[in-house]
Image (cartoon, rainbow, N blue to C red; front, side, top):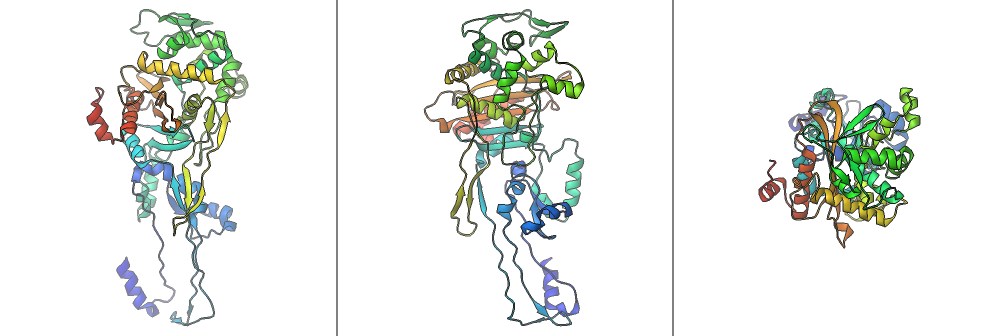
Length: 483
């Protein structure tokens, strides 16, 4: 305590070998709401010191452990100063002008792309549901919000009980330290049908006015794939165009489209071009690449051949394929940008800590430019808009502030009454100003009670973003039937 330090300072001659020093402690004003983005700091470990010793770190260094704190620790760290003091045999300070102190150097100030109001809105909308949500600006790759639950409060790690608190979090089976926006992956379910839609239009395997006659079940070998809602649906959707197929999320339509019209290699080619199964390059540590399976992968992992049922599963975004929410955000960004994907990023500017002067500004970089025509993406966007106006989301996306285009997804996990809930979207659907468009991805893990929350959450988030509202203001203004 400060009182103890005062007593020591006044009577240092009575306590030889005892000294005191001060060090700054991080304060995180947004607490748990920004935990996975900012991360936290802690004392350097012997293993970390072995790697970083030559970069000026010491055994007393405080170092970033996760998030931005870890990613940009070298920019935030600064340089420690050294204070030299000559003392006599009893530890009393004696004057000495022969040695000069080394003045510490402040680290840089980082300005992030996160919009604090949108971040809090997304956190509040996701609530206490295991999952993640991302708001991305497709025109330059800026991440405006990134939420993951369960989370933690990094302010708790600054006190005397930090080890106990960290231990408790590590023992939580829900794994609060995992940033599910970039580190958790799951089958994308019907959101994967967006990729098949673009592939089919680009490859011209089906005309825009051509139909596939859908039935209640699609048969492949000795297996049947049921249309969704088969428990209460008496028949299939009948003849569907590619717009109708996506709007109604017909399993029969996309099973046939993938297995009979496109084929495995074409599906894999387009999925790979969209970045499925590959790192996005976001400036956060420990990103997961997801998984894009192939014949070779299945043979190597399971020692089994690829079969037609695997192709059907892949066409429906099920089976082995897995994406992170941020990967899916990049997929939608490609559709919005006519094939251009910018590297998603959180760092916007580096500034001088003392003067605030700009040191360096982040330059958006193109990660991918898909070799797909602008016309294909235009038709894909049109199909995604039909999902909202005439399809599976027509009763859920209720905001009239902005025109939303998107796709629902319900991912099976092999358990009754438990599914992953996905919604992939962008808005405005049409605009002359690409900078005002946002991509919103919401994923709610199957571990939660099923409530189809991803699409409902998107409705609230879009309404909040384009009305500049908080969660409570959105609820009061929108008065959604599902709350």
